[in-house]
Image (cartoon, rainbow, N blue to C red; front, side, top):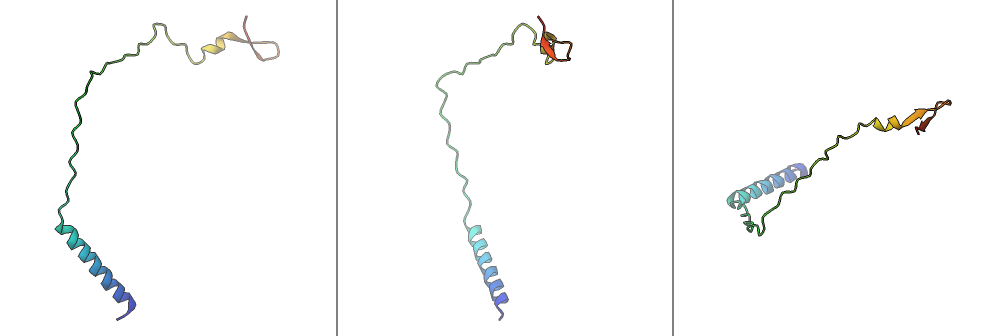
Length: 76
């Protein structure tokens, strides 16, 4: 018998034995532990939005003006 045939036969034998053993043992699923009852009542926190509208993303540029050299300077 060649070495390749021998290795193949041994691997098939081991895989078959492993599958037979695995099929004989029923798989038991672990039971989850029940959670304890909450001790206090949860409170709801609401984040209120401010009453004024939010400025746009480009509103900051309203405070700048272009001078004679073409640079942006704060308006006074």
